[in-house]
Length: 160
Length: 397
View 1 (cartoon, each protein chain N blue to C red):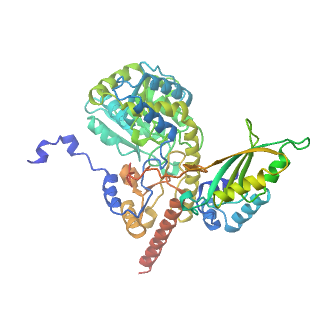
View 2: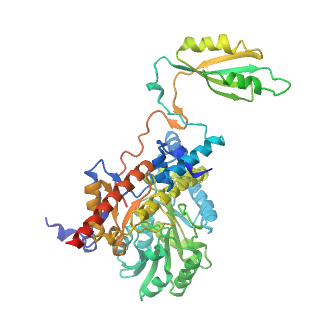
View 3: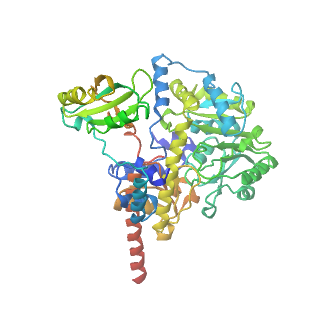
């Protein structure tokens, strides 16, 4: 993995001038590397990770187990890609086990998600069944604990 | 009461730690960015913490065997054989201690008669010379050189030898310089130790944090295991400073002697820490590699920035400290640290806190986040530029 990708995963600030400082490169070189990573598909983008309690209050997320019929050519791919294209779908994964797709959906309220499932998702030809589970509370997101660890607050500022 | 009438002479004569003085000033400045810490900024990996919690839930709150939990000593034996290349019997050749600091104290007390001499390299960890003094020995510093990245210099040890020398006290990789010891130099030093019939106490606490080359344990060299006490612990590599657990490996007659002191003054290391340490060796080594990779990148950044701004700094091959030279600016390292703290609110530690051979340098820890390192480096650069302007103005006047 490139040094830049390494640093991007650690830093909270993707400002090219700061990245250039850390890597010992010029800003232009960092911009060129970022562009290259985007073009070759390594870097998909970045999103701010916001604490769920700071989001709009009615916003809900649901995890949906979806059973679909595989097709002779392409298996699950065509349907999975079709489902993934909806704006409401945050993530979509093909799973082993009792169902085929795990779809994570986000909506501005319960009604919006219910409407998406009943009117859009389950009516697609090839979707055999859905089971929707609403998220009640989150404890960890993308590797970040949502409650702060006490950690090193008592660490002495200077030690041997 | 007059304290001087009561305090033992050898304690009275001990100098105060330079670190302690500096700590008092930095504590008054909560906004300062500190590159002064001598410990990992990572929290102990959860798996390790969880093992300690589980042990507590299970009611493991007793003393352990004085030597430490046998399960832990077995894990230590396996780990040391694979990482340090020397095999020790968990029953008789391993002692679990309260950090490496206790192990150093116990080893010195077990070996030194009053007046026996200990050769050690400087700059070094702050406790070495005081620990020798407290064991009624005589500490003989041997300088390491910035031109050689403060690495082991066997010739300097040979020159410094004098009748009455009994112990070589080593710490590679070194706090505060990041100096290391390669195989060739260690072999020469080992030959010297055999010739002069010296016991080697080798504090290898930073062994996992070696960035260039492999770490060579001196006990793995032919003929050395019988005269070496290998000291290691969990504080640095496994980020477990607060658990206070370390260990000593050595010949059974040496471990037995150390055990006598340990059982009377310490009884045993805390059981919850020993449980955590057992988990660290069983399942925590992957985390150590991840942390080392982070330190490595931070080191490259900080050393490059120091050299760019005119602070000559060798690249430390181990540990998490950079040790740049500051004497070129016409300030003592103590003045440099005080003014840097006052004018730019960055704390680094004067090199002289680690012995006279550290004069003219400061220790800056890169055990902190990139955000803080970037900001600290920018502030130090501003400070150094001002110093340069001052010295030019003085020259003109």
